[in-house]
Amino acid sequence: MAATPGTVPLSSDYKPSSDKKVLRYPYTMIAETTDYLQIDVIKYKPIGKGLVNAPGSRRNQGPQQGKSKIKTILLPIPSNIRDGNTTRYGESNLNSVGAALVAGVLDVMGSGGDYAENFKNGLNSTTQQVVNALEDVKNSAGGTEGIKAFITRELASRAAGLAGVNITPDQLLARTTGEILNPNMELLFNGPTLRSFKFSFKMTPRNRDEAMEIKNIIRCFKTHMAPKVASAGDTFNTTFLSTPDVFELRYRQGAIEHSFLNKFKQCFMESIDVNYTADGTYATYDDGTPVSMVMTLSFKEIEPVYDVDYGDEITGVGY
Image (cartoon, rainbow, N blue to C red; front, side):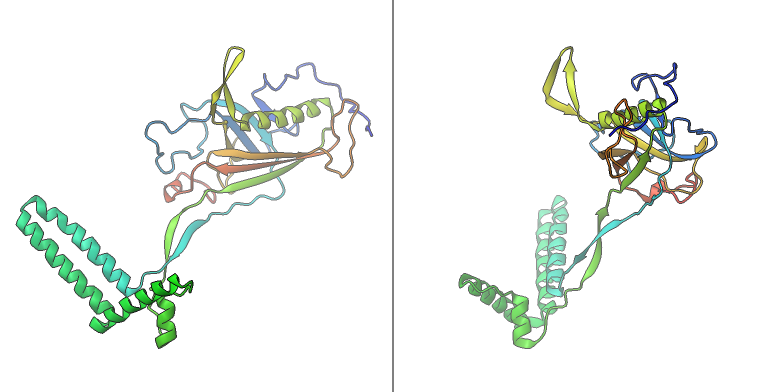
């Protein structure tokens, strides 16, 4: 089923995607006076021999020296925008016996530095640390009888395992005395996380210019999110693949950064999904352009958000 084609002819000054540095939808968007989402396509810059980046090194702060900008795409701010920051934490257990044992091992290993000055002094220091460690472990287990009971439960647990019975020393303690070792549970920092963002844009071309622009926008995203194959003339080297281009996203208010909404770090595009039957039925103009489409983009930031990313120069809610 084909719909009536647009009545506005293709402009004589329309350039194909390969020639245009800025693509936009709507095609007549006046970026100087409206709010919009700006997406810059940037050539990926690898970390290099240093292997690690300094925290906050990939912040998006507008044009920077050394960046290789390929394209700029301007899109309306979608209807459902949000951001969320998370940090990973994990539970950690360490009973008093284990804590005394670990502390003792650290002290014994720390005494190794004394050997550098004098071997005899080092030996005496290590011997004393071992004695202290054993005393601490004995006290944490409730004295000599506690140590005996601890070893007995451990041996009984292993013997039961040989017979196919799965029972731990802690379970034996709970069954025999109704007690358990205090696990000294604590929530510990496990590391940062990487944020993901998803945007959906409904695009309805109103004329041939806008249809061409939408086609070029979709093709641009698909091209620059794809892994790069090295080429030499007419041949391709399949030994290595190069990293796709990265994307820098910014909410804008005309010519300036948005004064409230969140900011982004450099992102990879994880996926692009285009629904060419956004209204539930297949319908196109005479040239084959769908009358309504929904483009969904998924981005993931390259590095986590750190505290150093929130400085006096950061406006709005920050990252």
